[in-house]
Amino acid sequence: MEPRLPENRCKEPFARTKKAQMIGTDRRPGYAALVTAHMLTLEDEAWLPLMRDVLQLPAWMLPAAQRAVGKGSWRLANDPLRSVRENSAREVIRMKLSEITPRTGSELDV
Image (cartoon, rainbow, N blue to C red):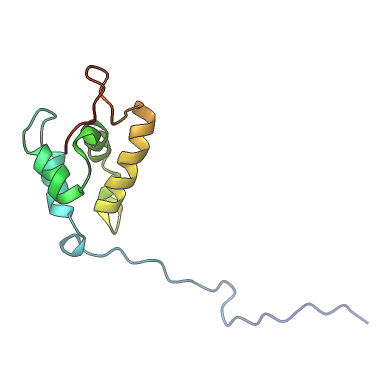
């Protein structure tokens, strides 16, 4: 007697799964603000309102947020604001930033 192979229960040999759909840029929160921020220079005064109002990050994280926005990985994220916040937190660790300034030893105000 010849050994039997198990039956293929799928209708197709390779079942296709649905890929996650990227939502349009007009429906992603903060996308337009981040596009504008991506074009700003590092010394531009518009960074502080962006940090406070849009990203909701403290001012001492500004260098990390600028680096995260500059890398541009937020362009492919469905939630670009969350992506920049998370990448900023990673950049803080890489840059060894802290809330305490070395000059005065006091915390910075937002």
